[in-house]
Amino acid sequence: MKNPEHLSMHGRRLLDRRGFLGTAGLSAAGLGLSAILDRDGLLASEVQTVGGKAPIRPIIDPNQPYKSRPSHFAATAKQVLVIYLPGAVSHVDTFDYKPELFRLHGKKPPGLPAVTFEGPSGNIAKPFWDFKPHGETGKMVSGLLPNLAQHVDDFCFLHSMTTDTSAHPQGENFMNTGFTMEGFPSFGSWVTYALGTENQELPAFVAINDPRGLARSGKNNFGNGFLPAAYQGTDFNAKNPPNHLVRPSSLTSMDDRSTIDLLQRLNAKHLESYPGDANLAGRIASYELAGKMQMSVPEVMDLSDETEATLQSYGVEGGSELRGEYAKNCILARRLIEKGVRVVQLFNGSDPSGGNGVTNWDSHSNLLNTHAMQAEIMDQPTAALIADMKQRGLLDHTLVVWATEFGRMPFLQANGTGRDHNPNAFTCFLTGAGVKKGVSHGKSDEFGFKAEEDPVSVYDFNATLLHLMGLDHERLTFYHNGLERRLTNVHGHVVEDVLA
Image 1 (cartoon, one colour):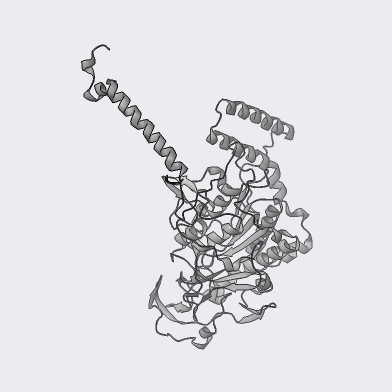
Image 2: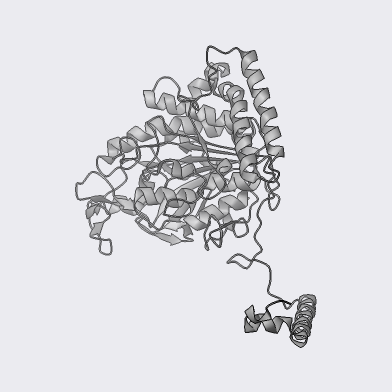
């Protein structure tokens, strides 16, 4: 070799025959030792989640990111409808009956906080509406929700819900993404990432926003976070269809079809030049879905074939304008489920700047009127939606979730007319596929102030929803920034008692 003096001492050592043979021998011995350790099961295990389980990442064809995929285990629920009520519904004025509030009305028992989220607390206040038993189960429900009260025998109530925050944006984030911070995938995104969808003509995940606009956390409630963009929710409602679906008047339907066919051929040719490029394939699939939606979305949004009896049962006419618009959203939700959309998220309440009980359920003052206004919009259409789905057999394979971000206090604020935020106890309910009927899980204390029996965290809640969809919350992961991320972070237990 020329100019060996230019080599470092280490380089010269590599050229030494004895050194080479010694290194080769040690390497061979290392390979042999690895084989023996592997045979005896003594090597480090494969990548595991915090729960000690091997992660399950769905096998996704980048050319067909929405293709239906099998669940982790057999489950009754194939689709899910989430009815989300931003602003925090008062559990003690709706479904969580507390006789002590009547007895102690106007008093201030010891042990309750003097200051809460928005300032000094007032005295204990009885519910603003009387409670009565309903159904064969005799479930106590307030007069605020007379229509939902008729279906309590089909509901599974969770009265011991708790959350980690008492602020609305963080509360919405936590309930819908499993984290109080932004940038994490929503529940719907996790489900569609895992399962895809049966209907390839419509989005796998649709978010139906309130007629009044987005909720406090906006699109984060149905965003994809760090999951591929294909799994974000597509948001539209009965009043506002997705943008840019209408064909320009200058084009005929034949021109439109020819254009779409040409684009498909060009995209396919382009993709051949970049085999295995998942991002490119995903973008092409998204554009192709958008093309299909030009036909499928107007069809599913056309309510003209709904019977007059159906429209009346939902309350499209005869109430406030907002109730009519929300009722149409409820019919749209049912139609999307009928078409096989995997996840539908239906919002009842809005306002990114704070609702004050007017645009959502956040009733810090004048709760009697503000909750009544929200209930007039929500109660009849929601009850009709659930009844209609049951009558059509959709609840046999669809899980329905009714949820809010936290509850409200059993005492009034200092203003004497509203209730402050309560993260320590609130109520949600489930119905449909895989869920017990006519039961109540957990219990808050005698005031409805804190979860007292079988508390259910938001982590537990989301773990249970995933389980009902046939997904193991500890194994459904996405590798991001060196971590096996999951919806429930490192927490959560399935609430077995609510499973049918």
